[in-house]
Amino acid sequence: MAAEGLGFAGVFNKIRRFFRSALFRNSVLGCVLAFLLAAGVYYFVSILGEQRQEYRDKLAELEQCERDVAQVRTEITVLEKKQARLQRPEGVKDVAREKLGMVAKGEVAYIVDGAPSMPAKPAGSGVVAGTCKKGHRPSGFFFSLFSPIIF
Image 1 (spheres, rainbow, N blue to C red):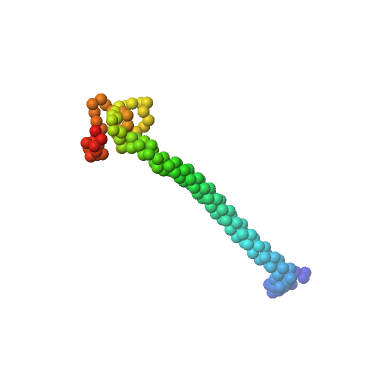
Image 2 (cartoon, one colour):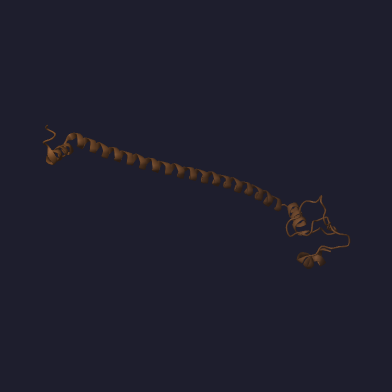
């Protein structure tokens, strides 16, 4: 019978008392705190994931740089060996024979077309020291200038 006599005002008063009660306030406060905690954890985890990805990217970049440095050091070693070779008179003569096709006084240069046993010619070099067609002299800008002196 008590429930029948409440009416709209009685139900409204009960709801109002529930909202003012400590149980409701604690549960709402708990929900808000749980939501804030969840949002903070999500934010922390997302930042942590971004930092891990950035760390992986930087680590890969560092490894690539270390490989590049090792390659450059190897190239430096090769170039230092070439420099040491070119500082000796024999090295200069060898390069003059290989790259420029020069020969010493009294020597004859021969060019053999399509010789499979010869090493590959450097790009732009049509003359290899020690090879020539019979009766054919090397040609080119260098030889047109210096052939009267050499031959």
